[in-house]
Structures are given as structure tokens and as C-alpha cells.
Length: 271
Image 1: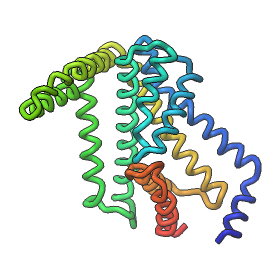
Image 2: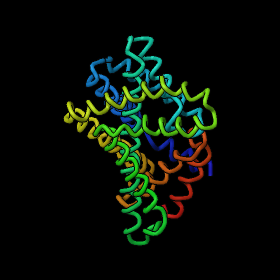
Image 3: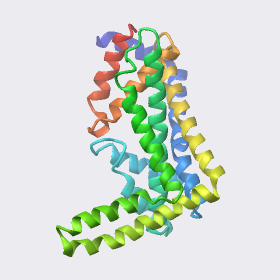
Image 4: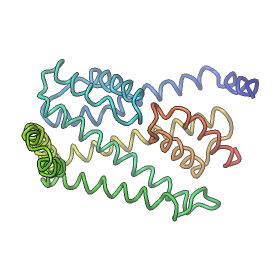
């Protein structure tokens, strides 16, 4: 119904468009602040403007890869190394820890949304459907972070185990794993030092993740307010959960999935 859509957009007005634009501009430093703080904590301060530029460039690459959550990380590491002289291990550690914290926050919020939907009246989901899987993934990420920050070295040990298994079939290639294992072990040691020596900074990094998510909820709520009746809390968690699940599909930018999921969920909700 294109005439109806055009009437809605015309009814936004300049102030509504300005508010949405300002929120999106504020979201960029919010989503970068965690990485910026991690870099400063590791002893390699980078300007916020530069960090925002690198994050935007990395996101642009990620949006062209299958699954928009990964793909631009090598570009972030390259920018830090080539433009600021940051060692590859430190640059890669900052990016890896930032992505792990971001995924932990995303899955935590998603679990909260699905649990809320499971117990809400006339909910779209039941406890027996997606909630246990999301909680299991959340527990797995929490376990990996706990092992990483307490010196258990989960990644280097995994690579070492793979080396031992592969060495039985490809003995000549097993020696090539040594530099990789050493690099990963150095990064894990840095992550452990973050936890043991800078717990306040780590806590602040997680709080920044929550603030970023509050911005996402605020943006969805304001868009609904400007386009029609504002979403209730239950409707808001439903729309956000479906939108985030669409971005977990193995498609560049979740193309097609997001565009079909949002009209479906709003129709189901009777909006």
C-alpha cells in the first residue's frame, strides 16, 4: 500500500527525522566506546574519532559477508597496526575481546526478550521453543569468557588439540601451528591481565554494551511513536528480538529476512 506508506513518511515531520538522525549519530560512539576503552586499558590509546572511523569501515565489510556480525575484524586489526603502530597481538586481542563482549550482550538481551515473550500473555513463543537454546548459547559464551579471563587459555588449547589430531595425518604441516598458538596464547594472557588488573574498566565496558542496547530499544520505540501508536514493552521486546534474530542469519546484512520478518511480526501482534 504505497500511498499509505508515503502518507506515514510525510507525516513524520522535520523534528521526528532530526531526532532519529541524532540517535543514530549518537549510537556510533556508543557502539565504539567499549572497543576504545579496551584499547586504552591495554595501553594503546586511540582517538574516539579514529576508532569510530575504523568501526564504521569494519561494519561496512561485515555487512557484505554472510552474517553481518563478522568479517570486518581483520580490517580493524590492520588499521590499528598500520596507522598507530599497535602490535598485531594487542590489536587482535582488543578486537576479539570487544566482539566477545558484544556477542555476550546481544545474546543476553535476546535471552531476556525471549524469556519475556515466553511468559507473556498470548506470547509468540513458549518456553519449550527457542528459550533453552538461547540460554545454552549464553551459558557457553559466559563459560568461554570466564575461562579466558581466568587464565584457562581456551583458544590456544583448542588449537593445540587440533594440532595434535591433525599431526597424526599431516606431520609436516603440524609445525606451522606453533606461531599461531604462540600468538593466541599472548592474546589470552592480555585478556587475563584485563580481568585481573582492570576489573572496573571491564565492568564499564559491559555497561557501555547495555547503554548501546538501550539506544536500540529507544530507537525502535521512537519510530513507532512517530509512525503511529507507541509500542508497549511486550511488543517492543518482540520486535527487537525478531529484528536481532534476522541479523543472525547467514546472509549479508540479513537481507530479505529482516524485511520479511518485521511485517510478519507486526501483523501477528495486530499492529
